[in-house]
Image (tube, rainbow, N blue to C red; front, side, top):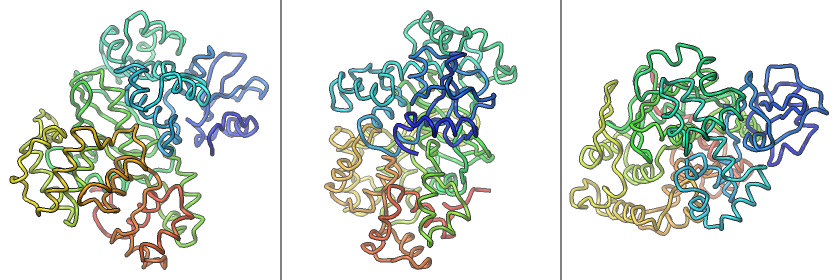
Length: 494
């Protein structure tokens, strides 16, 4: 699959006729006779090819006057994997829009974060996606509104503002235009048990993904490295606290065969869109396992690992700065020791939260709070203490930016310039915090051990040369290599 697939009419028609769910999110099918748009896997009888037209985004379909199909709900497709595998202007803009930046800061704020003019950003998005940033954000607001309408008993006025609309009238008009139903009609059509008995402030929804998805290393890694008070594994779900733009939240994520069950408790419902986006990034749910595994399987020494457990994802993070701090705390110590160091920081400097359902007690400390920590209170070697204090100072003053809009290569170079940052620390941050799918860890002891057992080169230089054939998916190759070990990170907790 590739950029601009919607322009390959023949290939799109084949995908629609075969109802291939792998293409959901890559393009959307608009039907000229019904004025409805669908995902490729829509269960209805496919229209005639001459009645199909293809668009790269739901927003482009809506802008062209098409309404979302009520059967396949194309607005709930997994996101395009392109935005998490690219670092160009369009991809970074899409990550920011998903994180709610346009709703909070407008298009000028989006452009400022990207370092381009508003006109340049609008022109680029329109050229590639058929819709500008306002239309893309509007489509996202419509989807957020639908989730709130169908899964909560919130008053419609509260739904409107929680979803990011400036007025109830705009909310009503948008919902009618996109779904051909009024907000009240959408709620009437929703299954009654999805709204009845909902705890105030709590939302239950499904996070879709492209199959296959192997949950073992994904949830195993998150559970095995969980920081007490911030994260836990409880009753088959990974739970953690979230620091969000308008408040805080607690999320419980449970793996299922075709979706991730997501239960969110938010102090402010305006954070719903951001919370969903961050949970999807955490679990790497927009990845395209067909493309990734297909390329890694081409290496005869990796193929058995891929065939044994396909669909491995890269466990990422909901907070890039938090992960960078934890990466430093974990330098040259065991997983248990890293958790202990992080738990001490959380207890001393994290913000308390109330969790009536479990043992979560705090938000991970903000960079501002960590920058104010007295270095003498940190129980770690002097060199690592210097690394820690330098990192948090740069994060706090903005001279190092790990946000979704950052340029991966530039950020990696800035990290390597900090004292105590070697290639391993910079690359593990690139892989799990920045989301670079090609980040690689040739010096990692577990990777070198796995490489030697498989017959791959075990020296960093030779392994890097061999791994060139795995690009741009080397971060996923890391997951398959790590999985050869018996460490708890590789197993779904019991």
